[in-house]
Every structure is written in C-alpha cells, then in structure tokens.
Image 1 (cartoon, rainbow, N blue to C red):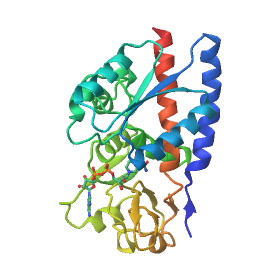
Image 2: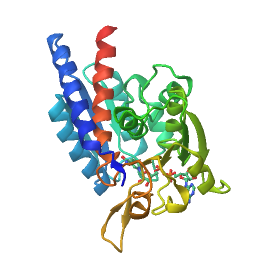
Image 3: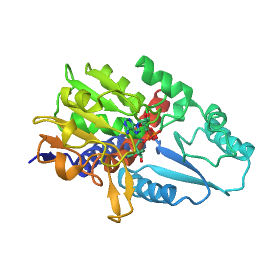
Length: 285
Ligand code: NAD
C-alpha cells in the first residue's frame, strides 16, 4: 500500500510561512496584492477564483477582481492588463485561461509585465524557467508538483523522472524545473513508443496528460513515486479523477498523489507564494 502524498499539509505549511513574510512586508507598509482578470463566468474559473480568494485571505494577500463580459474585445483585456502592469500597488496578475477564442492569449501576455506574471504566461516567465533566471514565475501547477515532491522529502538529485505531457503549462516547465534540481528527465508524449517501459524505468513519474486511466498497472513497479497532475471529470462515476488508474497503481507503488486532494490543493498556495515574492522583489527595488 502506497503512502498518500496529500496536498493539504503542504498548502498549510506554505500558508504559515507566507503569512510570516506578509507580516514582515506589512511592517514596510506593503500589502501584497493580486489582480485577477476574468473574462466571462466559466465554472472552472469561478471555482479557482473562490479557492484563490480563500487562500489569499489566510495568507494576507489582497485581491482586486477585474471581471469583463464574455463579449469584450481583445483591446479591453489588453487595456486591463496594461493598467495592472503600470499600477505600483498591484504586485501580481492572474489572467484566467483559456480566454474566449476571439482573444489571442499571446497578445494579452505581451501586455503583462513579466515581474507581475505570477502564473507563467509571458515569454519572460518561460525564459526564466528555461534559463533558470529570476524573471517572472513558473506556471503555478508545474511548481506545485515540484513543491509537493520536495516537501515530501523525495530526493530529486540524481533521480530518474519520467514526465508525461509536453504542454507549456505543465509538461515542459516541470521537466526543466526537475532538471534544474539535478534529476534526469525523460519527456513522454502522444508519439512516445512504449510509454509503459519509460515509466517503469523511472524512480518518479509525473503525469499531466489529461487522459484518465493512462498510467495503469503495466506502467509502474514497486518503490516508485507517482505524481498525478491530471484532472478529468469521469461522467460514469460522477467524480473527478486523475490520469492514473488509482485503484490498480496504488497497491504497487511507494508514494502516490490522490486526485482530488493532491497537486490541485497546492496550486493556490503557490500562486500566493508568487504574489508575496513579487511584492518582496518590488520592495527591494
Ligand atoms: P494539454 O492537453 O495541453 O497537454 C497534454 C499533454 O499530454 C500533451 O503534451 C500530450 O502530448 C500529452 N498526452 C495526452 N494524451 C497522452 C497519451 N495518451 N499518452 C502520452 N501523452 C499524452 O493539457 P495540460 O494543460 O498540460 O493539462 C494536463 C492535465 O493536467 C489535464 O488533465 C488538466 O486538467 C490538468 N491540470 C491540472 C491542474 C492542477 O492544478 N492539478 C492545473 C492545470 C491542468
């Protein structure tokens, strides 16, 4: 039976640490502030917004909400983001994605100051991840996966890690961040031959494919750590599931993140960590 790597204790640990940093900032007269830009009323955005508001309150981060109607133009979104980029009282900006099809995300990202890009949407942030430089911030989910592994005291240096998925939001940044921590990383995707063999060869598997049940018993062996980033709605079961066939994998491996209750629970704490860091960096200027 595997140890469950739950997100909640990690989120609480982070929250306590951040609350201390927020107190130190408030002695300097600074309130870390996050602007959330939401277009329309997508249920996923609303649910993440609620979770972010709750976490922000615990940490002591102030939130400004900018809500635009679904029918707004690209120029409206860019204008909102430009205002945030120029506002010294706002330290971080989260733009909910995907934006409506009529709005180019790259054009919106170009209007955001990378120093306030707390969810890795700008070219500056992605370059920061690529080059290991302090420019912007990595996507929160990618960092949540790393944070959960590290805070669970699972060694990354020298470990063989198999990452399934190569998106800009998770697969690619998480692979680079693992490499920066001295892991040996194998990136797998839809064209990978013999995915199961790559997974079995790894010490740690991070799966972010959006494919329920992809990682089954044939892909794992005893002693491994499995990090399931996937979030999928299982219509038949009427519940959220990850990319791992949990019931058959959990009895075999050493450690596994549950879905829900794993990576997803750490993500909003990472968002707050980025906002606090952005406020600290701005205060040092
Ligand atoms: P995406 O669709 O952009 O990318 C998926 C990647 O997985 C692609 O690179 C694709 O090559 C690979 N892939 C898909 N099916 C595969 C298969 N059968 N075999 C091998 N590789 C395969 O998705 P994304 O935005 O990276 O998100 C991935 C998953 O993570 C989704 O389930 C999403 O809902 C979830 N997610 C979770 C959080 C969180 O907080 N836990 C946040 C964002 C996304």
